[in-house]
Figure 1 (spheres, rainbow, N blue to C red):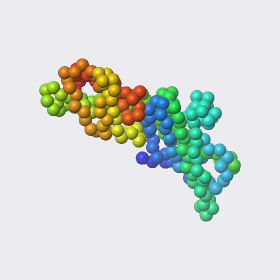
Figure 2 (cartoon, rainbow, N blue to C red):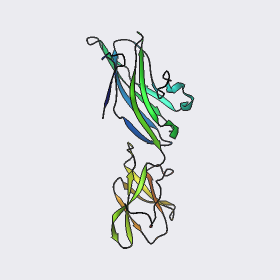
Figure 3 (cartoon, rainbow, N blue to C red):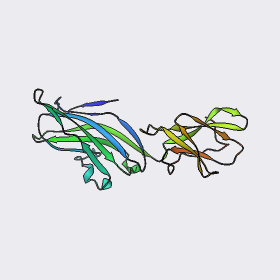
Figure 4 (cartoon, rainbow, N blue to C red):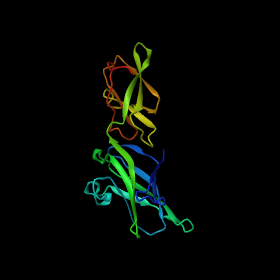
Amino acid sequence: MCWFFTALQGNDDWAVTYPSSNICALRGSTVEIHCNYEYPYYTVEKEFWFTNIDNEPVDLKDDTDYTGRVEYHCGDPSCNWFYSSCTGTCTLRIKDLRQSDSADYKFKITTDNGGAYSGVPGVKLSVTDHWMEVIILPRPTSQNWLELECHRMCHLTGYRTYSMYSNWYRNEIQQRRQGSSYRFDINSEYRVSCAATGFKHLPSPSVCKNSTVH
């Protein structure tokens, strides 16, 4: 879904679009937030990302909470003299995500003629520890087995496989694609959890033979 916002000063030559309005990411990972923008045919003085809305926007690069963790990747604008407008793209990259990074991220551009525009409401970022959960399916294959499936609690781009873990083996027991199931021996005493491949340190809440069937 692409969001379009008209200029605050009523000038249709200003615009910011975001390919995604909501993003979910794991704590400790890296996330990228993209935008496309359009502005009148002037020279860009500054382009930056911010989160605060109460006062004058603060560049994330100047925010001590993001020191050493923020990068901007903005392409050179393309200008059309006939239409007296320019377009550009800018990507915000945040590394080593913290739960405190959960916020609405917005892009702002200023030009040498005193013009300025902020693309609001922006992109909502949710940082989480547990983005997956184990579901017990209501279709047991036998009296001694249950079927388990790992489900995403929010959409996370780029992670299509997950691993099942147990406290009995203390190791990975299966690696599955999203939506596939795993058979679980209900006579065993161990608990099963799952995690995105490469994120074993951020497992889902675990289930056992006495857990509720969904």
